[in-house]
Image 1 (tube, helix red, strand yellow):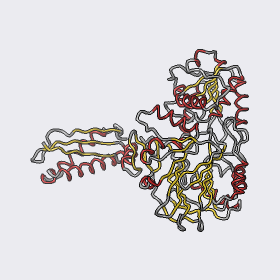
Image 2: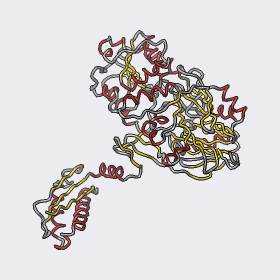
Image 3: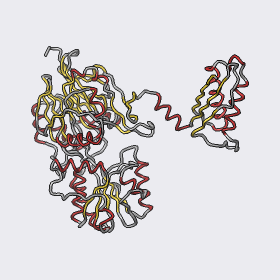
Image 4: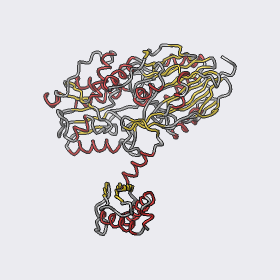
Length: 555
């Protein structure tokens, strides 16, 4: 490479938010860089994006240079790291590298989605080291809440950067390998130029409990339960599924699966040998067929998803599974911010029916897959990086992580956000520019730019409704019959009891009759005048301005 070759980093997602992870590493002269993408995930839309299913990174920057994209690496199979792959891969076309479990889930999803692309996947193993373009990439095993998670040691002639991915230190992870301390120490001895590191739990002191601790808690709770038991957790947490199943089996219960997402994960986990020694699970019909104290169900729906098994059970709408007084539901999960209302609705429904509900508020039934501060301190001590870039966090997390890394003695710490272009070497580390960034919104089968106005229009519609007015106009500028008015989302009557549709009708005629014949024949002027008049009239009696649409048809 020429002397002006640089080793750079930029995030298209995941820096300034938790979710939608997508990082780019580049090496080479500024105008001839080769790029390596790490992860391509989604975020989940909240109430501020009505009708939107998923949020994805805007990959326009790298899409323009896809000929220089030498590969895509998926560090693990959580949706915020792999969820946008099927949707966005056709725009990139590069070979994708992932572990066997992640590849199994990706293939299972493809088979369940007609039209999903066949993506060229190369299977890699934790501990493997391969060359991808100018990058020498080593996959380092780390513990996380999904099997086969990896950190990446990315070597170039300018130095090595470790991309931590999602990780924690757990000596007893139940399923999969623990974080490879020996290998990380060896990398530190080799010399780590930079560390791009998970910030999710940087605000929490100490160390995260182990999956083994959760397994012990579940075993005790299930042993004491009298009626049916349902354990709900993230379907991808195979260690938790195994712990819950073993707790049921130890208590003399048989285990069944409720929910297609969990069935898919279990099938892939068995293919990968991650559930060896655990008997085959039963179908959902066993829940009603077996005695109440002889069944334990693993169910989807820990986040209150309305179509998941748990939500249908809470509403007595599940075709084969129902709960009643004396049964137990264990939420072996955390509630993702934004899902509190949905989860609270589930819990209240079960409690009202006499079902005992156990959450992480009253028992150790869940542990995070991310490192707390004591674990982060160990990682910094093992790797001894010269440069740190906090990642996987909201602005508060990133800012706190900057201070934490400096306290660990890291010589240079950079706070970067999505779109910032960071140079690791060979010259001094710095933020040297920006790359295009943004979001794309999955709206049904369509990908929208985040700035498209239709979503903002939906927010306005949800707040104040819509009035649609169609007026047929003669060539002389007279109405040909009464206007056709459609009202949606508005109250029927004002506070004083007047009919709102009557007020709208009166306003249309008053506005029309107040215009000269020439202005009536000007369709644009007429529609604007009626739109403005109706909006103001409704605002005057309701206090809100609806969306008003006027169509003028000449007959």
